[in-house]
Every structure is written in C-alpha cells, then in structure tokens.
Length: 104
Image (cartoon, rainbow, N blue to C red):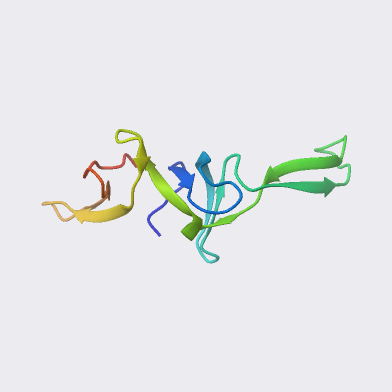
C-alpha cells in the first residue's frame, strides 16, 4: 500500500464517490484508511470526564483502500502511486500520471 497519512485521496466507488479528503489514519493489517469527511457514522457515547455531554457523535469510519485513489493536485485528477529508485539508491513515491514526486 503506497498511501500514507496526510495524502489526499478521492473516493472512486461507493456512497461517497467523488469526495476528496485527507488520510487521517492507515490501518495496514485490514487494508483500510480513515479519510477526512468520508464514510461518516454516528456513534452513541456515554458521558465521560473527557466528554461531559455524551450523546450521538458523528465520526469517520474506515474505508477499504481499493475504493480510493491518490489525488494529483498538479494534474487535477486521480493517479496511481509508483515507487521509483533514485541514483543514490533511495526510493521515492511518484505519481504515475506525470512522474512528480510526493513530498513525504
């Protein structure tokens, strides 16, 4: 999985198709991502010291990595990410559509 926390992705299938958001968490074992503003769910919470009010809280649920594609801001379209090896031997993530390196 070449998607990391902080990357911008676009949802390509499902109820939130076309929605863009930033990756908040990566769950590698489950092949899922938590994307900002995507796949919202309502959670019923009890009042605690941290949350005095309690009640119904809306938050993001994980979405499968196959349902999203990384978003290339310069091309304004989704693109795959490929790994490219530089002359010094280091590896860098690169957008496939234009060869631009992602800033990690």
